[in-house]
Image (cartoon, rainbow, N blue to C red; front, side):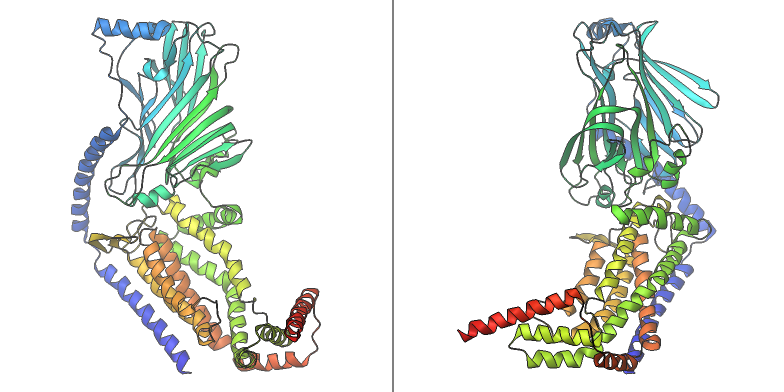
Length: 630
């Protein structure tokens, strides 16, 4: 009875602490005047930070060839001599803006490539626009050989732009000309409110220009620009993913200094930057491609500007001496809703871009994608995002409560048998084999399985891992606030440290602290009984684990998504209440003891496995006695 009072008092105290924190946050809400002042200050800071980021990106960008001075006749002549027949193209510096309501692309006359890709609806953690391409962090071009044995790169060629409309769509044609009727064209077509841009590379009249015996290669390089507070956390989910061999999804390493693969039959290549992706897809699969990913992040830092350095070199095929490759550029959010919308369009449904999202592998990914992602999407459509997490957590824990009941019932049975097991341990302390035999007989007679408590825990693992992958990768949580957490997809901060603690960071997050306390209380309930039992040789020290687990939680999740820590906090709190209810109001240990005694009286029929195990143990015991007799 005293134990029951202690448990309930502890939980009530824990709930009161959380209630006080909620009240404190409510009372600290800023007034409308303070909010307006904060907004103005944030806008000024964002403008300053965008200027600083631009300067930093330029400083870290790959060195560019000097631009051509079109007023310098000698320079123009040298350029035309270098590019041969493509010198027919008008050499003019500049670029063309191609945009809709959600994305802005700037395409350069030199190279005909995208030199800037900006998201219009999204900002970074420091309130500046999200750029996927900016100030030389990306290069795209074709490398080919002409019949006069010139090796050319389209990044060095000038293209003539022509902007037009096709219904509601905007079309930009970039042509590197050999004559008015002979050219290499990069064609971009952008649709309203769409991140996917139709992109075609085709040639006209160049069958006598291309050297078909030499390889024609597409090259695409990109350095992922940092967008989040924690660059290490963002980098963990920044990865090169590709679709090849008729729908197979593969990935390069997210943590190795450098990973490289050469693959065949590639449908699309995704340079994922955590919550945003730069994707190149094609209608005619690339025959082969060399893919490279280099990790640029070694430790947490506020000054690192890039996460990964990606590179692709893919082979293209000429048809009748001409080139005609239909492709697509995607610059936008790594969002399941956005990707799934393309599955409803006949032209794009075969791309299946949703597979580029890291849902997790096997059954874990299936649960994440088809259960938690749509369920949370439904809840957040009418509930605040943080409340939706709490409601989803409650529903998950209630759904798993029968499993929790089975686990606790097994613990209760083991507790009832504890005196008899202790007696056996003492009686056969000098004969481990006999002690094991008698213990198994006791379990069999009593109808108790020592593994029955582990099975329910194993059944919960797919759920826990699926949720572990859901929170860090769910775009729906990005920059959604709850209580003191400004962004549920990033860590919350209640205090900035003037120094950095190894493996912890330079800040204090409250949700991991609450989750760690909840885990401690939960483990006190679940391992307290185990700690009371005699510690077996070779078995882990449960008391040590009880204290270590919350500490590991505190350190590990300090830089993780606050939504994940919120889930663990609420989940463990609910589990504690469920276990207390089971323990104090559902399970009756006296009835369990009586049932076990009844089970002992009943004749037990051994199954094949039990009989085999008994025979093996008896044989081992006999051999042991025989050895002593000799």
